[in-house]
Structure formats: structure tokens, C-alpha cells
Image 1 (spheres, rainbow, N blue to C red):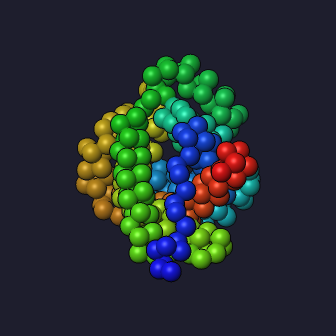
Image 2: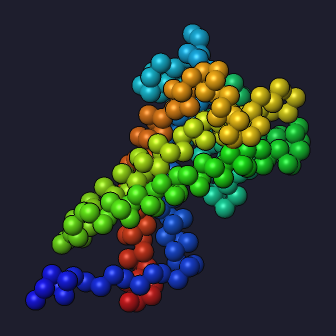
Amino acid sequence: MSAATQQKAAPKPLPFQWQFVAGAVAGVSEILTMYPLDVVKTRFQLQVGTGGADGYSSIGDCFKKIIKNEGFGTLYRGIIPPIMAFLVVPFELVKIRLQDKANAGKYKGSIDALTKIVKAEGALALYNGLEATLWRHASWNGGYFGCIQGVRSVIPEAETPNGNLARNFVAGAIGGTFATMLNTPFDVVKTRIQNQAKGSVLKYNWTLPGVAMVYREEGFRALYKGFVPKVLRLGPGGGILLVVFDTVSNLIRKHVLLE
């Protein structure tokens, strides 16, 4: 019997509502596991130059200073907004404001931040950075899903469930790393746009001019500020996403759809 005959047929795609559930579980799992690195990434992206005496020189230095000066809980400050992924842009803006050390003590939590931002800046302020968010998401999703399909096509099919988990994790991690390389400049600009409060000088308005401004004023490396904590999150995070999504999908097929 040929290898093609022995190979199991690919499972049918789940109905949309169950794909949504599997994707939501995968996304929340990745956020809960890797979120502290997102806080570190944001601190680096908001830091202009070396940041002076209070600046961060490395990932370890950033973790150390945050825990020492602000407490361990700060590493999870703003985690509720990204979990509410169905309203991406407003909650991304709230998350950035909560993660900025300059806003320490200004907001009691996500709802308080949301209320104060709307009161002080208007509801439309929640959509600052919409265009930059589209650039960031489109480049990451295109790079991630395009890459994992290519990687899966060259990695041999696994013969055991654990082997399949490992195959998916490797494909997802490579896809997450590649996608992060593509979208980090857009993410840097998005972070800076969303951290501009009403009344301050709005230095960054649109994504591509913002990318050009950061490059001109701070050099190419500034476009990749926060890249290391970001890729340490979204490389393995991409693997976690794919593994959890496939695992939850298989559980739904077995226990809900009874396939």
C-alpha cells in the first residue's frame, strides 16, 4: 500500500462558529502565556534613544526594573483589553496607555482608562491608530499564514499525535517569527500614535510617514525597537496559537460534532 493511501484524509474544516471558538481559545492561551513580553516590547517602543537613567538597556533590565519599581502585577497591566479581541483598535489604545510607565497611577484599570480617555479626548480618540493597526495586522497575518503553509509543505507528515503537535509548533513558531520581522516597524509607529494624548503635540499621524520619520530621526534600528521581546513572544506564540487551535478543533470534532 502506498504512503499516499495510508495517509489519513485531512479533516473537514469546522463550521465558522466553531472555528471562532477554537481561534478565541488559542488567542487567549497565547496572551496569558506570553503577555509580559508585550509589556516589555511596548516600553522599548515608547523609549526614545536610551531613555536616560530610567531607560531600559535589555529585556532582563526591563523586567528587573518593572518588578522592582512597579511590582510584578505591572507585567500583566492592560491584559484585559487584548483578550477582548472583537474590538481591536479601542482596546489596543487602552492597552498601550496602561502599559506606558508615564501613566503609572493615572488609571486604576481598563474600564477606568477607557472612561477617562473618552471623557478627556472623546470617543473617536479610541480609534487613533486605526490605519496603523490595519498595516500591522495585515502584514502579520499575511506573513504568518503564508509562512506556515510553506513550512508545513516541507516538513514530513507526523506519524504520532505528539509528532503532529511538534510539527505544528515548529511551523507556527517560524511563521510567527517571519511575520514579526515584517510588521514590527508598523507596530512601533502604531504604539507611538496611540500613546499621543489629546492636548499633546501630535507628532505621528499616518503610518508610512511615521515610519519615515522614525527612520530619519532615530535610524533604522529604531523601527525594530522592542523586536526581541516581541519575537520572543510571537515566535513561540505563533506555535502556541497553531497547536492550541488544532487541539481545540480536534476536541470539538470528537466531542461536539461527533465526527
